Image (cartoon, rainbow, N blue to C red; front, side, top):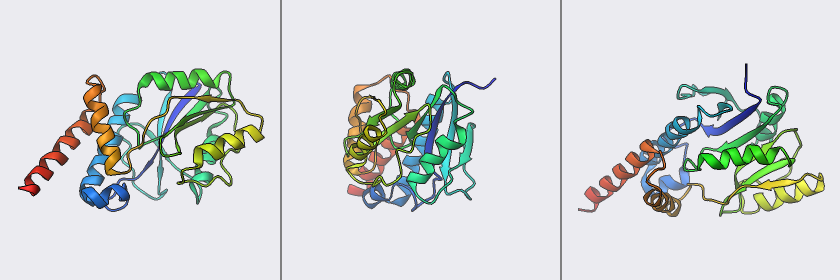
Length: 222
């Protein structure tokens, strides 16, 4: 029997030069690619066996996505707005307990935050977790509402505009803690600081890749 709840992680199919392009300007396309693969591996390792269904929703749709042993399906739509909305619409009947859609750019999220997110869905129409850059790392709903159309994605106003849309629709919003996503060299440093402060955070692939990046940089500087 399928669980009534789902955690769905939106991800890009990892290809050199097509993922983490801002980060690639500093690390190089190959290292940015390897780091993103580590994120996906650790996300599957940490979250694929919780008390909910787990899946990757990937783009582009024609990719041969490596699902890390988890369920996966292609995103549908020409824009991120459409794709997020369609994930909720296509799975609404299957998950009456609600869905959380999480970014693959924040592999460090504590598992307790996800349980809190599902709990918030019981009393709120929308759940959001803001990021420091003005976006959000997670969005959740039990019933499908269009909180996406017209929202200027990939800007520092995404979270603000989404709150306004939820208010227009008279939807209560439950908020999860604010954190960072990893898109720039500064974000990588934030991740290093986080991992040093949280030795119990189980991200072995990400930790290994960060060590390798530092080692390669040390060699190149000599």
